Amino acid sequence: ARVTVQESRGELTELGEAFNTLMTELDTRYQALQEAAVERERAERDIALASEAQSSMLPRLDMVPPGIEASAQSISARQVGGDLYDLFALPGNRVAFALGDTCGKGMGAALLMVQTVTALRSLAALYERPSQCIAHLNHLATTVAYDVPLTTLFYGIVHLDDGRLVYCNAGHPAPIIDGEIVRTPAQPSLGAVDDAQYRDDEITLRPGSTVVLVSDGVTEAPGQESRFVGLDGVLREVRDAGAGISARDLVERLLALSQTGDADFEEDDATVAVVRYRGPSTVLRVAPRVDAVEPVLARIDGCDLPPADRLRLRLAVEELLVNVIEHGRSATSIEVTVVNRFDGVGVRLEDNGIRFDPTRQAKAAAANPRAGDEALETPIGGKGLTLARHSVDDLCYVRWQGLNRLDMFKSRSAGDS
Image 1: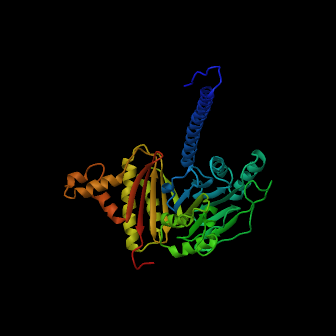
Image 2 (image 1 turned 180 degrees about the horizontal axis):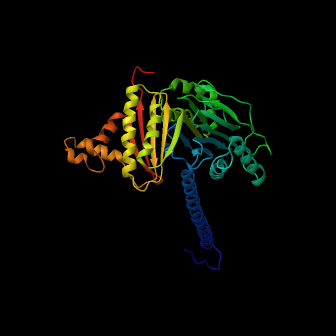
Image 3 (image 1 turned 30 degrees about the vertical axis):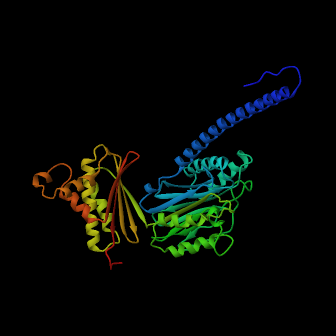
């Protein structure tokens, strides 16, 4: 709204002009606020998309190979962060894992993190050794891309058959392995030195060995007894937690070190990853035929279990494998993984047939124990599956990426070693 100003001067005229000037300023500010709101909404949508893209890159740690227990979690200082972690299977019964930290926070760091994870997975399929992947990533950071923030990165490969861990550490905090900080000569971060030469380090994990990785958002958080938590503070927490703690619980306990609640402290992205080697594992690939059962049972007979425990596991594996072969129609191959863990033996059956969950049949049979012989003659189910279910300590099924995956575990009886 405006007022009409008369040409004659006077107090009312000056008041009208002032009013009109004020209204013009208000209109201008209102328009600027509207434009700012639109820009803010656009930025929020971009952040939401970046966060979704970042989340989609995170690995399914509940789907790791049976020779590994793994957990990881990241807390971003903003809506999106520059820390990264990854874990994925490689050919040759190997598992790769990584944890990195991009300097900076927010959108730019998050986008660089996504690019790094994508490039690492591609390079892992091409190069055998971690140092080769790291060197190539550094080449990309120093020659292909310009003005990118420095990135620290730990990248390791566990050989599940013998427990060898081969890794390359590019400027990242040292790993904690079996309650000890494993320090090695420093190597430059990605993007720091053109044509930097990187080396691999190697250590042999034993069954139950635990590898702990953290980003500097944890080590540089304020400590109770010192200025920072530091890697020594993380080490104390790992030792206090004890060897029996699960990977997930240990991650949560260590991540809590970064949550100071100190208003004067500018929190950084904080990430913790824990990888536990369960024990040597072997993989057998067999055709979906009944005559393929014997080689699998021979492998079970060689497991390090007391005779009574080994017999129960053998019974369960035979019953479940035969059911998969006979009723898992359209399967062209079956992969059997046997893991000699420190606390028992784990077995995974995986096939590419139609969806078939033998554990449901076992549950149905257990729910109807009074079923007569007629029920036992049905194509699927019966007392055999029920007996198999009670012969092992853990049995679970999941349909994942077009595969049937059946995991079982038989613990070592108390008093046996």
